[in-house]
Image (cartoon, rainbow, N blue to C red):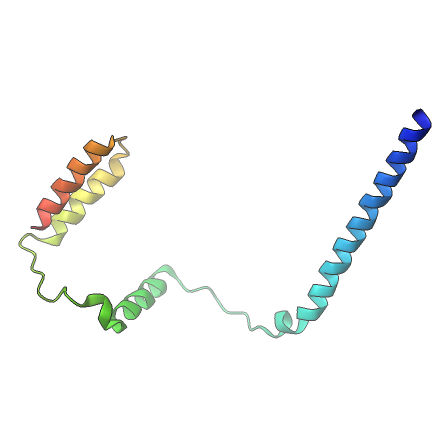
Length: 113
Protein backbone atom coordinates (compact mmCIF):
# COMPACT_ATOMS: atom_id res chain seq x y z
CA UNK A 1 0.00 0.00 0.00
CA UNK A 2 2.74 2.42 0.97
CA UNK A 3 4.71 1.52 -2.12
CA UNK A 4 1.72 2.28 -4.31
CA UNK A 5 1.19 5.69 -2.71
CA UNK A 6 4.86 6.54 -3.28
CA UNK A 7 4.49 5.59 -6.92
CA UNK A 8 1.38 7.76 -7.25
CA UNK A 9 3.19 10.69 -5.60
CA UNK A 10 6.09 10.32 -8.05
CA UNK A 11 3.70 10.24 -10.98
CA UNK A 12 1.88 13.33 -9.70
CA UNK A 13 5.15 15.20 -9.16
CA UNK A 14 6.34 14.31 -12.66
CA UNK A 15 3.04 15.48 -14.09
CA UNK A 16 3.25 18.79 -12.21
CA UNK A 17 6.80 19.37 -13.44
CA UNK A 18 5.82 18.65 -17.03
CA UNK A 19 2.87 21.06 -16.77
CA UNK A 20 5.14 23.79 -15.36
CA UNK A 21 7.66 23.24 -18.16
CA UNK A 22 4.87 23.34 -20.71
CA UNK A 23 3.52 26.58 -19.25
CA UNK A 24 6.89 28.29 -19.20
CA UNK A 25 7.68 27.16 -22.74
CA UNK A 26 4.34 28.54 -23.96
CA UNK A 27 4.97 31.82 -22.16
CA UNK A 28 8.44 32.13 -23.69
CA UNK A 29 7.12 31.27 -27.12
CA UNK A 30 4.42 33.96 -26.85
CA UNK A 31 6.93 36.51 -25.58
CA UNK A 32 9.36 35.79 -28.40
CA UNK A 33 6.55 36.05 -30.95
CA UNK A 34 5.53 39.47 -29.63
CA UNK A 35 8.98 40.77 -28.66
CA UNK A 36 9.19 43.12 -31.64
CA UNK A 37 5.82 44.64 -30.83
CA UNK A 38 6.79 45.17 -27.21
CA UNK A 39 10.25 46.60 -27.88
CA UNK A 40 9.15 48.78 -30.80
CA UNK A 41 6.38 50.42 -28.81
CA UNK A 42 7.27 54.01 -27.94
CA UNK A 43 6.99 54.84 -24.29
CA UNK A 44 4.31 57.47 -23.85
CA UNK A 45 3.17 59.14 -20.70
CA UNK A 46 -0.31 58.42 -19.50
CA UNK A 47 -2.68 61.35 -20.05
CA UNK A 48 -3.59 63.39 -16.99
CA UNK A 49 -7.09 63.50 -15.60
CA UNK A 50 -7.76 66.91 -17.13
CA UNK A 51 -6.55 65.74 -20.55
CA UNK A 52 -8.85 62.71 -20.35
CA UNK A 53 -11.75 64.98 -19.40
CA UNK A 54 -11.04 67.25 -22.38
CA UNK A 55 -10.94 64.25 -24.71
CA UNK A 56 -14.28 63.01 -23.39
CA UNK A 57 -15.86 66.42 -23.88
CA UNK A 58 -14.52 66.68 -27.42
CA UNK A 59 -15.89 63.23 -28.14
CA UNK A 60 -19.32 64.18 -26.80
CA UNK A 61 -19.38 67.43 -28.75
CA UNK A 62 -18.43 65.66 -31.95
CA UNK A 63 -21.40 63.30 -31.68
CA UNK A 64 -24.38 65.39 -32.78
CA UNK A 65 -26.80 62.47 -32.44
CA UNK A 66 -26.15 62.25 -28.70
CA UNK A 67 -27.56 65.74 -28.18
CA UNK A 68 -30.63 65.52 -30.41
CA UNK A 69 -33.79 66.52 -28.58
CA UNK A 70 -31.94 68.37 -25.84
CA UNK A 71 -31.93 71.69 -27.70
CA UNK A 72 -35.49 72.49 -26.59
CA UNK A 73 -34.97 71.35 -23.00
CA UNK A 74 -34.96 74.36 -20.70
CA UNK A 75 -33.91 74.35 -17.08
CA UNK A 76 -35.68 76.75 -14.76
CA UNK A 77 -33.37 76.29 -11.79
CA UNK A 78 -29.62 76.59 -11.84
CA UNK A 79 -27.69 73.40 -12.33
CA UNK A 80 -25.34 74.40 -9.52
CA UNK A 81 -28.12 73.82 -6.98
CA UNK A 82 -28.62 70.31 -8.39
CA UNK A 83 -24.89 69.60 -8.15
CA UNK A 84 -24.77 70.86 -4.60
CA UNK A 85 -27.72 68.71 -3.51
CA UNK A 86 -26.42 65.67 -5.36
CA UNK A 87 -22.98 65.96 -3.78
CA UNK A 88 -24.53 66.39 -0.36
CA UNK A 89 -26.57 63.21 -0.85
CA UNK A 90 -23.69 61.25 -2.36
CA UNK A 91 -21.14 62.16 0.30
CA UNK A 92 -23.56 61.54 3.17
CA UNK A 93 -23.05 57.76 2.66
CA UNK A 94 -26.44 57.06 4.15
CA UNK A 95 -28.06 53.70 3.60
CA UNK A 96 -31.42 54.17 1.97
CA UNK A 97 -34.25 51.84 1.22
CA UNK A 98 -35.43 51.84 -2.36
CA UNK A 99 -38.42 54.01 -1.48
CA UNK A 100 -36.23 56.54 0.37
CA UNK A 101 -33.82 56.59 -2.55
CA UNK A 102 -36.69 57.29 -4.98
CA UNK A 103 -37.86 60.17 -2.79
CA UNK A 104 -34.36 61.67 -2.75
CA UNK A 105 -34.02 61.32 -6.53
CA UNK A 106 -37.44 62.90 -6.96
CA UNK A 107 -36.30 65.89 -4.90
CA UNK A 108 -33.15 66.16 -7.03
CA UNK A 109 -35.16 66.09 -10.25
CA UNK A 110 -37.50 68.73 -8.85
CA UNK A 111 -34.54 71.07 -8.38
CA UNK A 112 -33.90 70.87 -12.13
CA UNK A 113 -37.45 71.83 -13.07
